[in-house]
Length: 233
Image 1 (tube, one colour):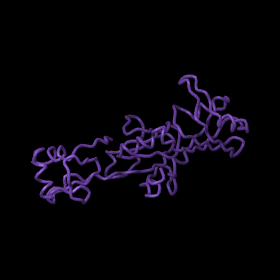
Image 2 (image 1 turned 180 degrees about the vertical axis):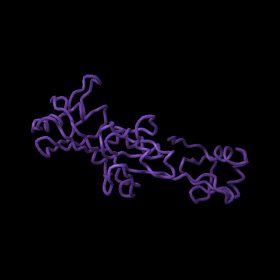
Image 3 (image 1 turned 90 degrees about the horizontal axis):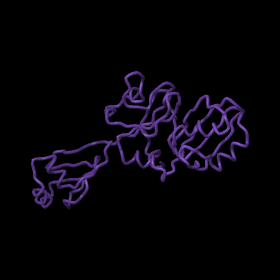
Image 4 (image 1 turned 30 degrees about the vertical axis):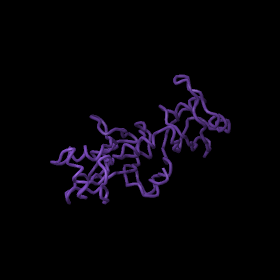
C-alpha cells in the first residue's frame, strides 16, 4: 500500500550493484530509462509504479491495479479473516496479495467495494477534500417522508463526534425505500442519519462511488476499472 517515492540515485544503489556516486556516470552515459525516457538527474523521483531500466535490465515494473467488486451480504470488508469470507477471497487476480480496500462496507451491506495497490489513489479517493459522491439504496422499517429530504439536505448533528453531517441528497423511491447520496463516510453514517427519525435500516446497498458503478457485475464478481471511470473519480 506504500506510495513512498525516492531519489533516483538512492533507488539505483538499493536495486543494483552500483553506488550512489556511480549514478552520475550512469546518467552521463544515458544508461537509465524512467518510463521509457532517458533519466537526466539523480534527483528524479522514482515511485512505486515508475518503470526503471538500467542497461536493458528492468529494475522495476510494478503495475497499478484498480478493481470494483460487487460485495454480497455476509462478506467481510477485510483482506484476512479467520472465520468469514473476505472481499479479497472473491477476487481472482495475479496481484491480489498487493491489494487493499478503499471504503469498507459493513458485514451485511452490499454493493460497490474498490480495491487497489495504489496508495496515492486510494488516499485521494478517501480524502474529505475530494468530496467523492457515494450513492446508496436503502430499505427501511418505516415510511420515508418529504421531511427527511429537507433534514438530510441541512445536515444531521452527531453528538458523539460533535459535528453536523454535510448536506446529503435523498430521493424517495417508494414508501419504504430511498436513494441517498453522500460526500463523506462516517462510522455507520447512513444508519445513524435514518436513526435520527427512529427509522431502522433493514438493507443497505452501495450503488456507486463517483463514476464507478456495478455495471455488468453479479454479486461476488469483480472487474478492472475503465479508463473513463478512473478519469472521473
